[in-house]
Length: 103
Image 1 (tube, rainbow, N blue to C red):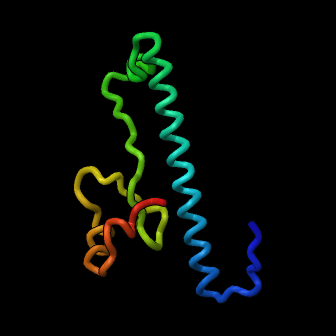
Image 2: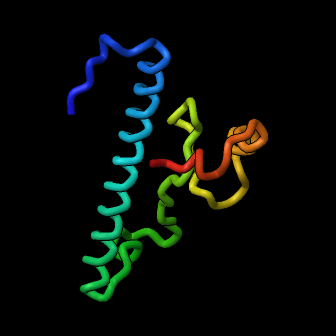
Image 3: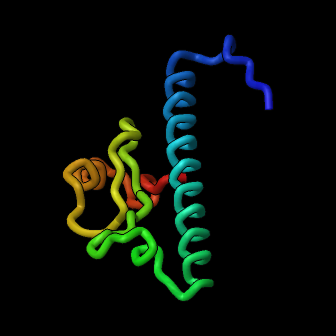
């Protein structure tokens, strides 16, 4: 895919930058979730949980983020527990939950 960046407006370039950051974050989260699922499956083949093999007794599995701040990709939320302030503010500003999903 080739995009002629020199013909894009500043606004379009900034939006592209946000979209790329969001896509990278989403890709990394999916890969991490795939790795965790593969590790869990491998442990299960031997009759163990991943928690048992790692020696943790209170270790929690990390939930993959489901939502992301529209302008700050560092702010994410799994969709579990209390809604973060940025999420509630985005909804009040007219965004839908669908708008905030990580692509």
